Length: 266
Image (cartoon, rainbow, N blue to C red; front, side, top):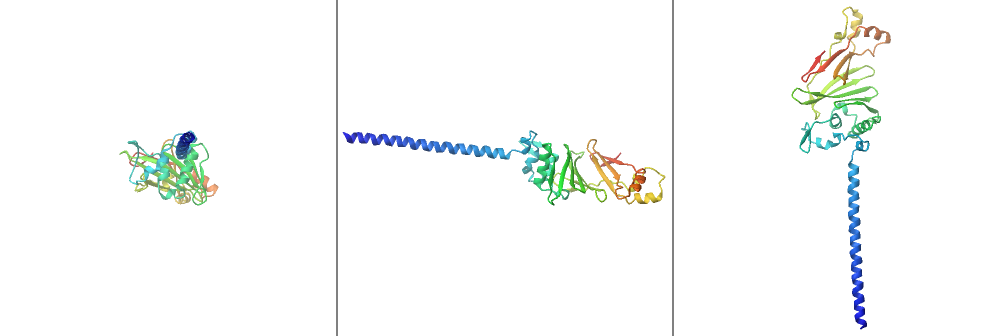
């Protein structure tokens, strides 16, 4: 009789043990699935762009992996052709004018600007670079304490887009150089028609001594993004205050517009 009770007791314990084992396994599986879910959620959160945390639209600059093919001129998302933004071009363009800034420097500048913060970073040479203005098709940067850079889109009549860059030295003199590139960084043989020094003289009655000094002055270019105008002026920074005051009275500003094929003088 007691053997029967012993067998029943053992069977009951085995069932309970099996149930406990099943519960333990299920508990492990549950915590494993929960851990995987939390890791995936954390990974997705880490991939979110800083600008999302600032409640601003996501700039396509963060899809720079789509620009790995150097032959592309556009970004394609879900089968839709999306033109590059000025921000994406700024991040991905490998040209000498931007060699001071690493990719992270450029991303940080855009993030700061999108958040309404002072967009200033330490560049690759330990100096300070600041993004001072950004629109849909234009950016202005103070690259160093003595240099500036304008980046702008130039639309061709055939629908293609080029990138224009105006590099300007501000000290000890002011002088600008213009270069044009494709969206993938290949330099284009597009020359800006910088006027000769005497073309800036607004009067026919100028002393020869003044003219000789004018001919030695470098040209400073500026891009006015509001009306998409290129302004050219002679820089008198190398002159004394008295000489600058006299010469400036005899000088004018020369303006150009881009018409899709070239620069047209106004």
